Image 1 (tube, rainbow, N blue to C red):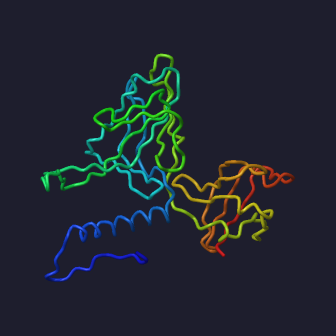
Image 2 (cartoon, one colour):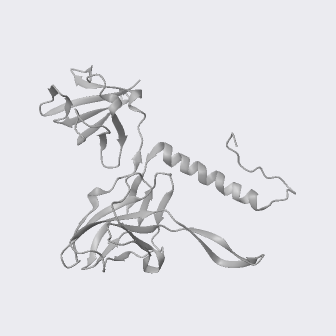
Image 3 (cartoon, rainbow, N blue to C red):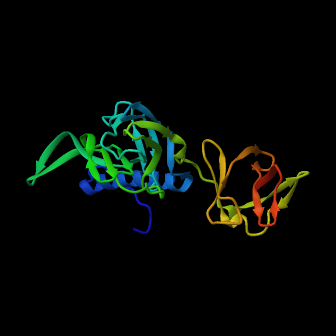
Amino acid sequence: MTDIQRPNYFTSQFLVQEDFNDEQAYHRDLRKRHNRSLHEWGVVEGLEVSRKAEKQIAVTRGMAIDNEGRDIIILSDSPLPDTINLDGLELNTTIEITIIYREIPENPYQVEVGGETKFTRTSERPKFVIYGGTTRQDNLQDGNVDIKTGNAPTDGTVVRLAQVRLDNNGNVSTVDNSVRKLAGAKLPSPRQFLVGTAQNGELIPVPAGTVDDWVIFVSPRELEVRKVTGDPFLQDFKMEVSAQPETNGWIIRCYSQKLSTDQVTPGIANYMLLRK
C-alpha cells in the first residue's frame, strides 16, 4: 500500500472480515503514528511503585506509551494485579520493574469455526516484567508477571517504572521511581532552532557543533537536553525553562553547563531557543 487507506462503506455493500479488520487497523495505526511522531515514549501518568509488604510491591493504575506508539493502560477496574509478589528472588540485589503492551484474545463469548475456537474480543492488558532475576520465569501470578535475567532494555520496548532494592532477607528495602522515563511532547529537531546565550536581549551563538550533538525534548516535569555522545559535554544536566511568546521561543537557564573543552559557564547561563 502506497497511501493511507480507510474503508468506504455504502448501502448494500457486502462486507467480509477483512473490511472490519482494515477499519480497526486504520484508526490504530494513525494513533500509533501520532504517538511516535509527536510524543516521547515513557510513563504518561500514574504507575507509581511502592512497598506494600516485606516481599510485595504495589503499582498504581495509570498509562504509558512504548516506542511503537502503543498505549499501555491499566484502568481502575483492570484484572491486572495491583500487588506483585517478589518472594523467591535473589537476596541482596536490585531489580527493575517494567511494563509492556500485551493483547489477549477473550470473549464475552467464543465460537467454534471450522473446529477452531474464535474469540469475539481482544483485550489490551499490559504485563509486568521484572529484570534482574537469576533465572527466567514466565506467566507468574495468573500470567501477569514475567521474571527475566539481566538489565531492562532502554529502547522503549518495555517501559521502566522503578528500581527496587532487596535486602539480605529478600525484603523490599527501597523503591526508586525516579529512574522512569516520562512521556512528553517532542520538540522539532535541533537543526530547526537557533541556539545561543541570551545577553542584553541579543542571541550569542553557542560554540559550533554543539547543537547537532543534543537531543532536545519536553517532558511533563522539565525541559531536558540530553547529550547522546561523550565529551566534551556533560551527559545530563538540569535546567529551568520559561516561555517567550514574543519570540515564539524559550529561555533556558542551565546550571554550570560545560560548553566546550576550554569554556565553562560560571553559575547560571541563559540560553534561548528560537524557531527559524
